[in-house]
Image (cartoon, rainbow, N blue to C red; front, side):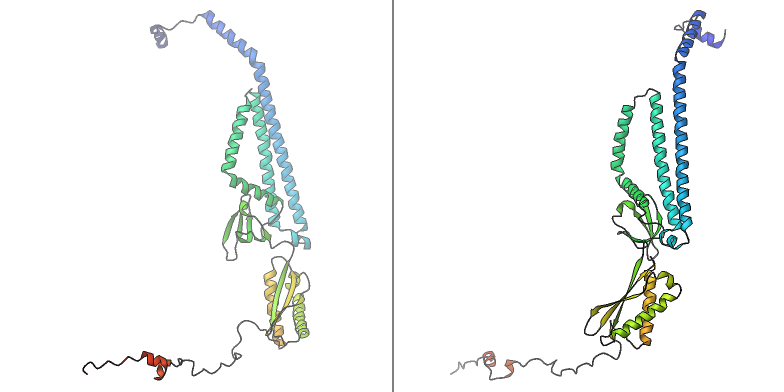
Length: 356
């Protein structure tokens, strides 16, 4: 007798299975399998079909989006190097913007397709989806309240990229920080400040944006001269210096229009201010202003026209008035005269002679 047979013999609850019972059980199992195999096959085929359609559709949509992004990049490269390309297109900016848009669209498409396929698979298993959808709705609301700042940053970043409000290489004023855009993300924008620091600005915190690198910029210079100078001569000297500057490299490319002498902006007793303005390439305003001041100052010095303003130069201060010798003297006192009523009132009374 084997060990398992001995155990069955020692177990009083063990009921031996006859051959007929075993055959009956096998027949019931075979009948149950035969009865349900068609249902299993239909469910399996339905699930396979759902997954095949979902992954095929996802692959086709991702390929279509990739081709669309590549076409956008090729269109940017086609105009790069031209005047229009230098004004509107930045290769790195366009590439990053297109990749961000493509990443968002691909993620949204994958989420929608795979999420719908998952729900259809659960439905194929005859699972009631109403409690699941209700729980997912409650969880979504809770997550939305808890991560509202993250959702705000993400949505703001998506719209900033879609609307092309700014890109890599732009100089912007974002309110909370300003500088050159280093990287544009869906949640955070990186700026490099004037002193080289890196600012990480959440997109949801940006309420207004001033882009200094789109379109064109205006360089303005004020020149303050003496009021006795000949205005026609001042205008001619400034115009001559500006004309020479507009013909030299690289200023002929950075100046997008003639340098204009707009006229007087301020007339005082000791000075008058002449305003000079020019339309420049975006982002080159400060350099044009510095060079324009340099050339105008040299031209005015050669013409004998002196720029005034600020502290007066040495040797031109007005002569100091002589000091008043009586300034440090105090006013005479009424007590100095013994005949004054104040002195008489302050004189002590004589003591009476009590011995007489």
